[in-house]
Length: 336
Ligand code: NAD
Ligand code: UD1
Image 1 (spheres, protein in one colour):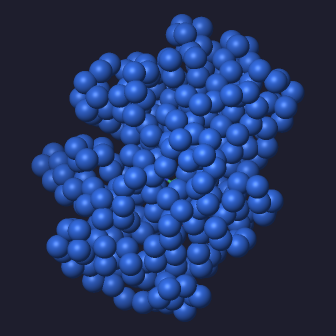
Image 2: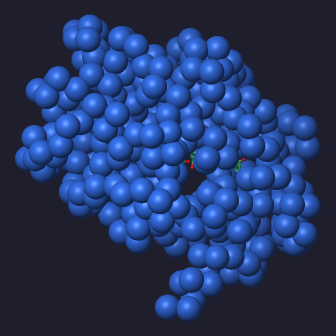
């Protein structure tokens, strides 16, 4: 199939492009590079040893999107393009609502106009709020506490309503847990701007000596060791989940958790990182981070049952691959 991958130069999108190419699909990337670089597109082609079509466009621009649908045969869309920093979304709600909602509307409209019936959407476990773990797809969604989370819940709703009104349309809403790690080649991975908010990129930068020590946000949660528990999933497993969702898509709306189903605490992740890479990660315990929940992990059985997909890579692989990319990337940037 010819797949339009919006946000395909980004962290999860780039790994998914490789998985799609390896599965025999063709890829058209639409990305405005607001949080990525065009070099990543070259690296995707190097790794997969295949060509991709790259369109540097903003997917909120209906005319630019129309040109793609008019000029290329699109069989399906995977919509990654979006702004994703929770804290920033509180400061810049307009940017987040505009970018993340308008892009979904523009793409859904183009699909309707050109008779493209396969649509896979990047949602997030954040839509579950702080209900009881494990999170199951059938749970009612709680109101999220930030504009970013709202854009995910709203996009899910928009795509569901469109599908209900157009029975030929097929939509897969993928709720990711915590994507970490990098491609084994060390060529592509996560490159956060400034000081990272998320745990794994913070840990890799501490290990590299770019940051002094990890601040562990709270050790008084009701968890195995008091620190926050999350469901970390290797980005390569996550990428393969998209191929499975796309290839198994049938009419209607289908919601899948993409996680491992296994919770790992902050201190367990630090220990795994130290073991995997034989490197020390200094840390200190500080106050809880406002807005954090104690535990978040998936019931991932539906994706296994219906898509035949499950995560295979363990926390050691995630730590090893994240570190390999951090070392390569820093050396590459410093050599420039
Ligand atoms: P990313 O920032 O690395 O990738 C997003 C890509 O979209 C970037 O290349 C960016 O340049 C592009 N983009 C943004 N707005 C655009 C627009 N209007 N037009 C064209 N391109 C645009 O982020 P990621 O981590 O790869 O996340 C991909 C998707 O998955 C996002 O929708 C994100 O909200 C969702 N998600 C991510 C996580 C995570 O932890 N990384 C968790 C849950 C959900
Ligand atoms: C964050 C986002 C969430 C997104 C998810 C996936 C927030 C509030 N939520 O969630 O919307 O879907 O990433 O990437 O940003 N931690 C530390 N020290 C640090 C960083 C994190 O102790 O420097 C702890 C946190 O308290 C948490 C765990 O590590 O217990 C994971 O944190 P993080 O990587 O930021 O992910 P989430 O909080 O799950």
